[in-house]
Amino acid sequence: MQWNKTFPALTVAVLGLAAAGCSDSGGPPSATSAVSTPRAAAPCKLNGAQRRAVARALADIRRLRRIQAPVQTFSQQGAPNENEVTGRFMLDLGSTKLPVNVRSHLIHLAKTAANLCGACSQGLEADEPFLGNRGEDRCG
Image (cartoon, rainbow, N blue to C red):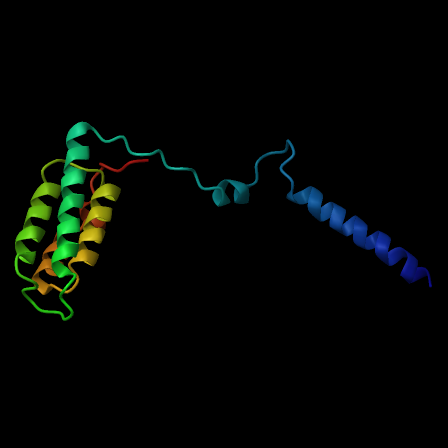
């Protein structure tokens, strides 16, 4: 009978100690709290030339989507004018130096817009930033 009366008190004491150990109340910061809290990245501040380049690239992506909309099958050459619009997109994207995350996002959007054109996809894949050519133009 004694065990039944002390068990709830013991359970409350253990839970209280566990909760006290998990709090961050004035003591030295634990290593896990520093690792588990991600820092928010600062938003990119694009200058006028970069904003215009992004707007031209997005217009090219919309053109690619309109060109590819009636196409139902994959081909190496793609739809008529799809290669030219993809080339124009790559020129617009390269007209100014963009941060890596903005550039890679635009290339990803273009790859999804031109996924039925083999030559277009290969060109965009070759232009996509990867670990070795990212540089230091990253936001955040």
